[in-house]
Image (cartoon, rainbow, N blue to C red; front, side, top):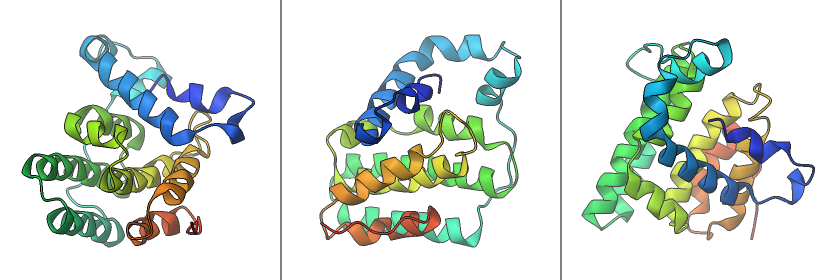
Length: 192
């Protein structure tokens, strides 16, 4: 989470590659979690505490989020043939479901949004680095979470920027699967 400001701090923000930056930040966060998580649990300053404290949320997200999660699970079952990849996506989608529930039930969302990065399947992030289309679709849904956190200066419009790049990157057969995320962030689908 501490590396997120790097993506929005530079003057060439409009010329950047937000998807590439997000993947680099995810890689950095995942690589530092082993040694930083125990230390961060003892930190109590307001800004850092928001990143480490996870408030208990209700069990289910709203119908809107629930429908999006169900659609991801259905797409996973229908399109992902490799069992290992399917399980990786399932784990990651389930973690995203938890983040949506946190947002919808009024719990503090910042920490849960970043815990998604550490608790999701490592295989998912391998597929994301390879630009697997379904990994991009799942990340597009996570961009809705980032968009909900846009009030944080170090996130700002980053969710929309990543989502716009994903929408522009996906082949036409995958574009319908990001329409929900585009609608939730008020972005229009980019045509290739």
